[in-house]
Image (cartoon, rainbow, N blue to C red):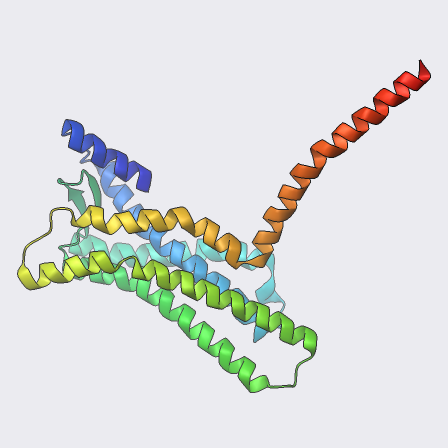
Length: 252
């Protein structure tokens, strides 16, 4: 979606082409929902660590089915909330200077309400979960076995990394928030506000998958195992081919 927005901006700058349509408005609302879901994935990961550490006896909350269904439940919840906020405020409109549709940064009630739902609420949930897990581990003291302590330390480390990633994503929004506050104070809109706001978002999306890969050991091990498999397989085939050739030669 970000690539599509950038392509429309380039075409608009070069050929002054307009993309104002119902599909454009729909894509603007969809972008807000998907951005909210992006941050909810971090909440889901922190929630999973919370269950593993604090409520480890409850196996149902650790089931695979729950975490498959959970994103769909969150979409059903987040979508009506955002639509109920943005539609009455006319939050998503066509930006003629940028040639795509998105939340208007000069619509202060709309952009602040979206920020609360998309950014602030997920971040507060992650911080609350992190604090709760930390307090639980400190309260347990020396009661747990060494295996449980090692697992809790590993989970806590992963949550810290997730929290750092989310914090960095929030920090990348500082340039846009600075320009928005300048607009509130001066009343003058910076002409490149939307493009400056979406540039760090696009950069963060590029590095997000790589960052998650190194932050979650399970994902890292899966990729390393795939790499080992791809490396070993050609060697095995070559060895088998050599043995077959020797067998054929010996038979002849």
